[in-house]
Every structure is written in C-alpha cells, then in structure tokens.
Image (cartoon, rainbow, N blue to C red):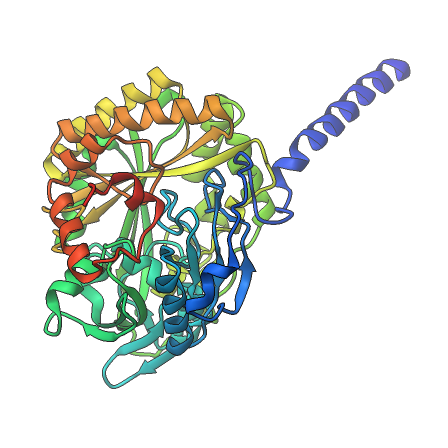
Length: 521
C-alpha cells in the first residue's frame, strides 16, 4: 500500500510539474517589444540628397518599425520625437526637402499601417504630452502624445474623461485619428467631446480646427488617420468623476436589444458594455452585460487613487490558456460569469465594507483605467488581432447569428467578443452614418504565412457579412480587405482622398494604408 501511494503521489507530482512547465511561458512577462513578422530589408539612403534641409535629431536613423500586431515590420528613413511644435516643423521641412512621407505615431495600436510608410519619417508624438486642466471650463488641453492613463492620473479624483476607449493605453492623437469610442453610450465617440484642435499642416503652418473654425478640416482630421495634418494639441471636455454602482447580468444574446433599451432609457446608467460567450458550447449565444449607474454623493465619498491592474500573471495565464483548447475557453467563460466579479476590489471607501461583488461602488475613472498588461506576452509564434464591425442596431441579432457560423467554419480562435453602442458620427469617413452596435473581436492567429492567409480569408468573409447587414468595418486594423470592399463600405472614400489632396497637395502625410488604397492622382 505504501508503495502504491508513493507511485500515485509520484505520478501526481510529475503531472503537477509538467503542468507548471507547460503553463510557465503562458504566464511569463514579455521580454521586450514583440516582433513576430518576417524580416525586411533596410533601405539605403543617400545623405547627399539631404542638402536642402538639416538632418533632424533622429531617435532612430534608418532601420525598421512595427506596430502592435507585430506583423507589419517596415523599413523607414527614421524616427524623430519632437517635444515642441518648432521641432516638429523642422522635421516636416526636412521631409518636404527630401520628398519623404511623414506619419505621426503614438502607441501604434492601429494595425493597418496607419503609423508609418515605407521609407518615411515617423514622428513619435509621445514627448508632446503636457496635460492642463481648466476646472472652471471643465476641459483639459493636452498634447497629442499624452496617454489616457496619464491623463486620468492627472485629473483624478475630481474629474473623469468624457469619451475614450475602454482601455487607457492609447494616445490622444491616435484616438482622434480613428475617432475612437468607448463605454459611455451617451457621450458618443471622440469627436463629440473635442472643443478644438491645433493642427500642423504640410507647409508647417499651425491652424485651429473646431466646429466653428476650419470646420471642414475638423471633420476630416477627426477619423482622418493622420492624413490631413498632425494634431499637436487638443482641448477636450471632461466630466465630474461620479460614483457608480456596478451591476452585471447574464442573459441570452437574443435578449440583448431589450436589455440595452432598458439601460439606455435609464438616465442613471453612465457606462455599459457587453461580453459575448467565446465558449464553443454556446458561442455568442450568451452575454454578460456590465453597467455602471450613478449613485448620489451628498456625503462626498472618498475616491481612492487609481490602481494598476492586479494579478497580471494569473490574468495572462487565463487568456493564453484559452487559446490552447476548447474546454479551456469554456472554463474562461465560466470564470468570467461566476468568479471574476467576486475578486474585483471596490475602489470607493464605503464600498469596502459591503463585501458584495454584485454591488460594488467605483468612480467613473476606475473601469477605464486599465492598461491591459495581461494581454502582452512572450509567445513569439502567435499574435492577437483586433477586428471591429458596425451594424445598424436592428441588424445586430441576425449579424451575430451568421457570425457564429463563420467562426465555426473557420475554427476561429476567438479570445473575446464584445458589444458597444455607438451614435451617428458625422466625421468625413464615418464608421457609423447611423446609430449602430459595434461588435469588437479579439482573435488569436499563428504569426506565419499560413496564419496570415487564414486571417485574410476570415477578414474578407466578415466584411462581406457586415455589408450584407448594411454595416461598415473599422479601418485601423489589418489590411486584408480589397479596394472594392473598402469603397463599398465607405463610398465617400475617394472624396475623402480628394479633400486630403486639397490640404496636402504634395501628399506629405502618408502611411501604408493610404499608399495601398488611395486612387492614383
């Protein structure tokens, strides 16, 4: 009996050791910037051509650059990082003299080549990151390179951002360039909270763009992917950092329109978002609806300092394990429904005594103060790709029903699916010409030729499905779509390009996306 116990114990120990060895790389911190794309040849550059303008103060001369997809490594002339508008103007003068394309970049989370162009000058805007709060006007004036994470820390606990993405890793300039939207279903996208922009044009002039000053430029710069000029500064609305009670409900996806209608009709609900099941057994058929409702604060409840995300390795392990097997996807969804809310901390002091994960009090800033460190890993042979599709609100359920079939046919490794509400957006290249629901997808793919080929096929099918239901797809993601698909979704695209050439006749501001899809002059 002792021997048998020893054998069983040894097998159990060996199994535990094997599981730990298997899990270790799935939980490991990244060991640098992830680069899983193919090598590209560096470009030769003749410095004699630069006589017409002084060489910029390069932070990287020559070499290559990539984005957060890690699949788009591109050879460039170099990277400059201006701290002032004068330094930015010098960089533009150099590029004009040498007929080099210029692209502004921030966190480089756009995965469709919007952050650089082959052979171009990349302007890293992150040193232009000042944040100035005007309490009386309830605005902030910020450099385009400021990250939302840092802005929140600056204005908390008194104020909160009105409109931004649901995570805080992006820069303001990048968010403006794509007209980002987030968890506030009433605020709309970025455009609605912008008071004014300072924009440097291709000739180095700086102009103001707003609804009343250069309004046509304004509606092209917002959601214009950096092609009309470089935003150097933005003045944005902020709102009081209200106290919210968090709520969650597990529903059948078919009941989502009714559930959302009730949330939208309730004036107390300030933020909401919804996750769909990625478990193979009920793929996209079950939904977890999160909402945050305003709580009266006559007593002046204390807002604790914004905290960084905890349990990063455990969260990373959970995400990465779900990529490996269907049963682990099911376990991840079960955990989100039944466990995750019970270990979340309530950030408002009074709520700490409640010990109730279903009725947690937080400030408005808290749900959006997430830099998603658990999504970064050291898995070099794979990458995780975002997609986003906008469909008219009445078309959501038939769209999701067909989406489920597409994923099953392609055996898509779907990590997350969520729904957000967007209002009609009136910028020139609008993803929402009418009120819509946004379906955001996070998909794992192998980082090789076969993985890219499959993602190409999947993307084109998803775009065609969206078009069938009268919707549009978000442009700052992988360039797997055809020019015909782009123009079908955005029939105003050629007019957008023609307007760009009025403001930038020499086409100084370019990126890989523009170079691929813009019609020849």
